[in-house]
Image (cartoon, rainbow, N blue to C red; front, side, top):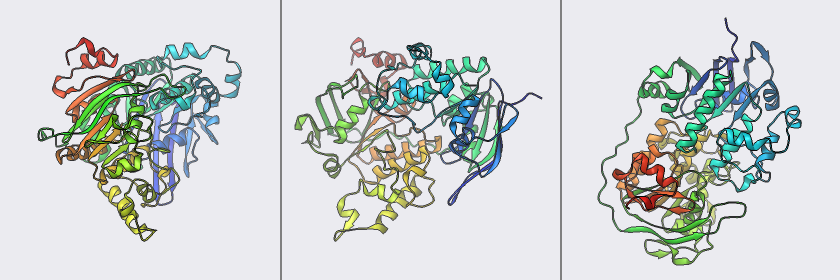
Length: 504
């Protein structure tokens, strides 16, 4: 019988009030691309952190190439030949790309590297990174590529990828899949964690399905329909999103005219003459490859970036260009950033206190005292409505899985009944059931007369829920066109900034 590259035998991991892994087993063969599938909070990331030495199991055994091992830290796993790309980035923002990659390598390997060694690796994997750029100046998509490069640089025998394509363009995703297939053909094992069922069916040889911390099936995903995989993962069929056509769009509620913002220090792309109208009762999608100005656009609209003429942005006809985020929220504009921890939520604060951050003062306090029960009730309502897996509304935000934290953030902003919602990557890292719930909430907002601007690199998402689409490239925004007029070839040209080739 062939020896498996990695075996996890009877892994159990408990947290206060939560059984994250319950007697889970997993076996990955050399050269196999093996998916780990499960809804948010099913225990996937915990299991992989145990495999990588970042967590110690309460029970069970890790076996590497047929030999039981005790992993005390990720460095032990890297020394054996494992690499991992985490869903939440583990990077030093004050260091360069090259320095971050070196820090992720085993010491003996790092000492053998020479000047200029990283550029060929970046070229080989088509990651489009500058080795001398500081990580703090990179977009979210670029930071994910740094994580991937750091793992690949050590030429691992086994590579664990946690939601690796969540912010990759279709071209970058295709290049990544080609690289993974090449690695597998050379004998490297791949453990692939993703909520994108189509990707798992396209890429993976086998799939272990987790539900509520337990293994429920090991299947060949290539021979299964997508709805079959979804039902295994969720234990029931996915709710169908009701996409009834909305009423005709109303008057503009958010107007932007010739918005230009210089590129921040260390970044290459600013905003150049961005103009658009967002109307009541519509969802406007903004597509594009990460790093083309989307993050700066969100900052300008949310109020984080205020160094611009007052009337360049108007909300319900009122100039808001110099208003701060709290003032814009009071007028009905809410924003969801793509960075969950540190920008969207404070990691060490409870979910109830994170609700307080964006709640209107009149709702949050009375007589100078914070309404603690009201905050807990509001957080509990979000947890129940959006299926957030959390022990209580007081648990710290950092204790939630990435997908559950995303559901909480989306629910928090929608609970504020916005007139206008600006959201970046609203379903990044969430499972198919949660994504359907979030999409339904956005459609309900639109049908109730609200408006949403969705910035996303998931083209299927944009084509599924948006009424009009535009594309960002090089800090410029294309004309917005009706969804029915958007085709794959057209999107490809527009992502290169070539929308002048097509009639608007």
